[in-house]
Length: 332
Image (cartoon, rainbow, N blue to C red; front, side, top):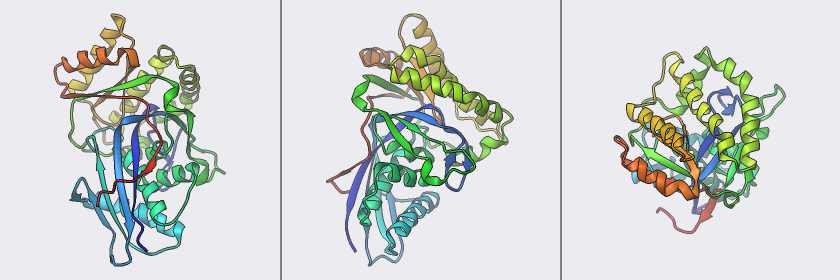
C-alpha cells in the first residue's frame, strides 16, 4: 500500500495542568485538564506506508530522528498498524514552526499530527474522540491537540475506567473568545528532563496528594470562568497552576528545575504590570518559557513590554487555534 497523507496540528497551552499519570503505559492522567489550542504553533507531519520499507523511517526537521524520538514514533505507528490490521512499515517526516522540547508542548502537536496522518494513511477514518484517545497514548497532552479552540481532557480515573474514556473534547470554538497567548521565549534549548520523565517522578513529590485532593474545586472554577470568558476570574488560579506544577517538579526525587532567572523576571514583570492596570496573567508548562494570557486588545502592548525585558529572546503571539486537520502539501 502507498497512500501519502499530511496533517497539521497545533500545540496547546494547559490552563489546568497535566502532571502525573495513574496509568503510565496508556498515559491516562491523574486529573482532568483544560487547555487552549494555539494557532501560531504548528507541526506538519507526512506519513506514507510503503511495502518496500523494511523498517520505519522517521525524519524530524529534515534530520533522522534520534533514538528516543524514533522509538516513540515507531511505537505510535505500531498502534496504528494494529488498529488497521496491517504490517507495512511507514515513512514519517515532521517539522515544527517553533522550538521543540522547550516547554511549548511540541510533543502534543507532533503526536496529534502523526496520529491523524498515520491513521488516514493506513486507511482508517477515526472520529475526533477516537483520534484523541490514540494520540494520548503517544503523548498525553496530544489528546488536547486533536480538538480546536478551548478544550477539556477527561482523566477517567475510576477503577473501572477504560482507555477510551480518557479523551479531549472542545468546550468552546476558537472564535468564541479573542484571548491571546503571548509567549516570552527565554530559551530555545531542549530541556534536560523531558515531560515523560517528569510525569513519572511526580509520584515522588510529597505534595502530589495534596494537589490532587484540592484540584477539583480549582478545575471547576477555571472551567466556569473560561466559559464565561472572564480572564480576571480565572487569572489567579491559572498562575497558581503554573507554580504548583513547578513545585511538584522541584520537590520530586531527584528534583527537576525548569525555571531560569529570566523566567522569574518575566513573572515578576507581569505581576508589576498587572498592578499598573494591564490585565495579564502568566502560566508555564514544563519548561522555562512563559505564556502570558491577555485580551486581544492588550496583546500588542504586552508584546512590546516583553521585548524590552532583559533576557527575553523573542516574543510569539497566538490566538486560539483550530483542530488537527489534513492538508495538501507534503514534506516529501
